[in-house]
Length: 195
Length: 251
Image (tube, rainbow over all chains, first blue to last red; front, top):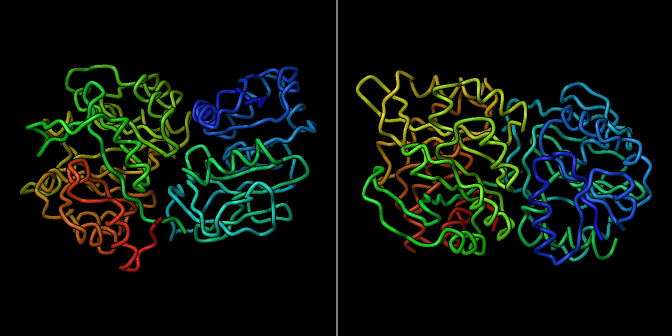
């Protein structure tokens, strides 16, 4: 059973439909106790970092998310929330990874970074097992996590940024696997089946 | 690097796809979800659904339709048409739409852009702008192209970006349905002001029109409707052509 953190993120429905298509059982919950009964956690995210942190506080999920030992996949803003700090609202985030989440500033690129980009694998991970080189994923974001020690895949928008990362049981993807066609569904399936 | 996008637009009425020429004379082109699945297979990068009856008849949009579509396909899509307030926006995004496109409502209430961007992020908010070329320049139209506004097209593009829109869907009414090509001049002009992505719409008839919109018009995405629905142009072939001509395309 997969637990989807239900804290008002904009893409919660899309993530749950993707799991339906994969035939994977899941629950939507904002209760730490219920989530802890699941084998894995998906932490979706669309919206603003500040609103998201406020919701996590309201549902008393912050300590749970930081400390769980279950495999957890943060998607888009979900992954950005792993950072210690976000320039989106200048707020403290979950501090799972010591990095800042920054705003794209390059005058020569489009912001938001919107559309399909290929990624470069920086280290091998089961999350990307069976994904052909040069596969494209769908991105829609104005903020990014810079490359760091935990980056497992990179993409670029005028500058390189973290497309996927892993620290211990925490996995993150900046792109939207639930909207990234076959390659995206494969990433979700890998998280569910082989992580 | 982000690839250039090809976006079929499905004008939806009662869950069926229709497409007008210069916004009138509707022809039925088929079932929307069936088409969405077909386009996903063919390599469309995104879909836009416009409820064309909505802003005329004030009909509340398509939450159920959005939900069914989000269930069916793993691709991003935008929904628009008659979306008038923050509650409509929230319902559509929660049902599985990635973006909403706002047109008449933001001309009447520009602050809706700011409010929506603050709540849902700029990436979810598309400003749909219909312009017609007139003797005194580009004029913004609302209500499905039926009502002129005092707004000048380029100034309105800049304003929606300032307010927090994440993308502009620019429809050139004077080109729409003509199949003589996109309005390259206007596309290229607004690109010097804007940092948000621009979707070109109106006038596509052949492969080269798309290439021109991307290269000379510097568009980030190109939208077309009838051309794709009636099987006259294959998206697969179009994308191969663009890729062969040196563009960064998801094949």
